[in-house]
Amino acid sequence: MPVATLPAPKVSRRRAHTTARHGGHVSLPFPKPSPGQTVMVGLGDWDSYLNLDQLCEKRGMRVRFHRGIIEIMSISFPHESLKFAIGRMVTAWCDSHEIDYNAWGSTTQRVEGVMGGEPDNSFSFGAELKAQPDLFIEVALSSGGIDKLEFWSEIKAAEVWIWQNQKLHAFVLSGEGYQPVKTSQVLPGIDLKLIEELAELKPHSKAIREFQQRSVRKE
Image (cartoon, rainbow, N blue to C red; front, top):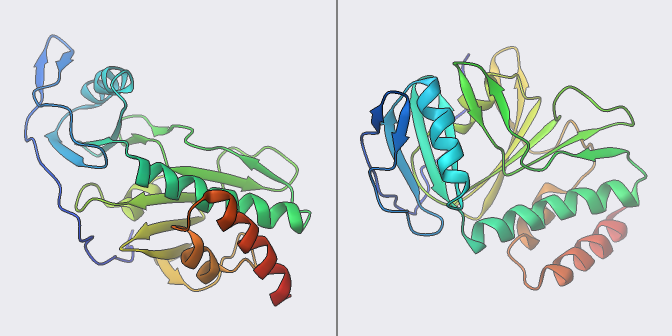
């Protein structure tokens, strides 16, 4: 499925190219990456991914698998800060407009043997609990790695937002793959540019209050 592409992030990453596998057991053949860095472990099978996922969860790292490629990321405050701020502005918008939603957060999504991993944040909209989220949010602070749009195309995610290079990029799934858009289809009316402007503002409480106030003024 064709997907849109993003410019490469400005932050570099470290790489490790192999995994050590012995009878299904996977060891970590690299030091824990610095906070926010992505490590490409390289090729691996589904069982390697599942084992690494268990090992890395205890070490504060996340693992993603896509068609034989394994990626590991170490969590950082800037990453978690952006994830929280963007997600909180989504819920603030829904609350002020009486839009029902379910917060899925970083719920793991898997297609056995094909893809597995957690989004940074995710939501479904409407009163009923759906089979999967409508919106997936990614914070990309390190370069390279598994292509996020190709990854989420495996489960036909309706809409994906990617924070990269201090910009919020929104993509909607169509018959021709993911297409960049300036307005959300799953949350019509939400101001993506305002989210982009306020996402890095600290403290978070100030960013959310300003988002709420300015959203009301624009209506």
